[in-house]
Length: 204
Image (cartoon, rainbow, N blue to C red):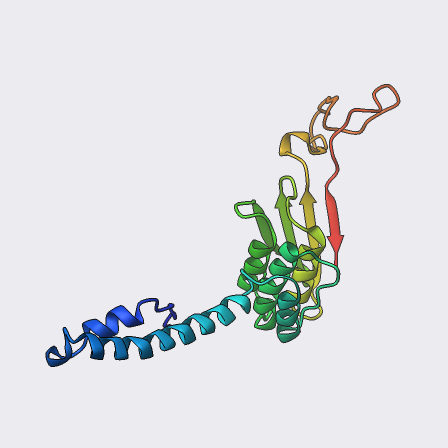
């Protein structure tokens, strides 16, 4: 069972309420007890300040760099927002065996919340991750996270469809009759500004 720590903010009130009946209603004794409990509260607050500063979500700048040293992930020029993503993923990577669940969890943390992606495995020893939609996340961080998390000897392919599906390059189905399109196929001399957007493939 995992117990989550929570900050206590009412040492004085709780302590005074728990005094034995013979000590309640005695201002001098109550003030003495409260003076000690106030010092305990100050210590509690200081401890939680350190905890929050050392937490990835609230840390900034050099404090994030210190966490990076602990988990083994240098900043490499990332801003704080992208570096938090890298650090959270690195914690998973440090315990990753490259199994599907690990790779899916790493991908989920690396992309925009709610963004659609698919995970597939192919022969020989290949992991294929396809992310759909406009990339509002750091693509190099996604690649680095998955590359670090995959098993040794496994090839990584990341397919990024960075445009809406309606604007993505599409080939005519085969076999079958060619489908004429002025917007989703190749551009040509007559219409150089038309054509579908090509997907991006990253290999690692």
